[in-house]
Length: 63
Image 1 (cartoon, rainbow, N blue to C red):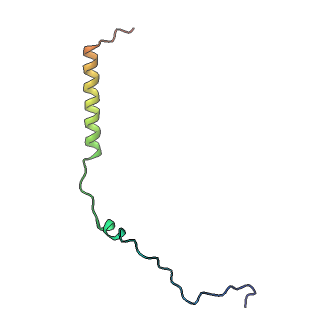
Image 2 (tube, rainbow, N blue to C red):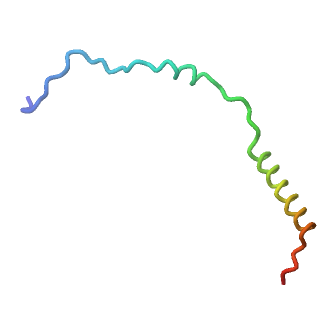
Image 3 (cartoon, one colour):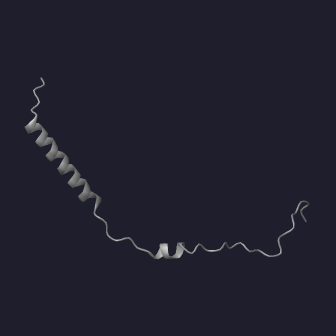
C-alpha cells in the first residue's frame, strides 16, 4: 500500500448543471448567407468602376 494516499470522496458528482441556452443553440442552423466570392466580386467590380471613373475625370499626366 502506498504511503501517501489521500482519502477518496464518497460521492462523485462531476456533472455541472446544463446551460439552458446551449441545447437550442446547438440545434439551430444558419441560413444560407451570400457567398463570400460573390461579395468579393461585387467589391472588386465596384472598385474597378470607381477607378475607371476617376481616371476619366482626372487624367494622370505624371511622367
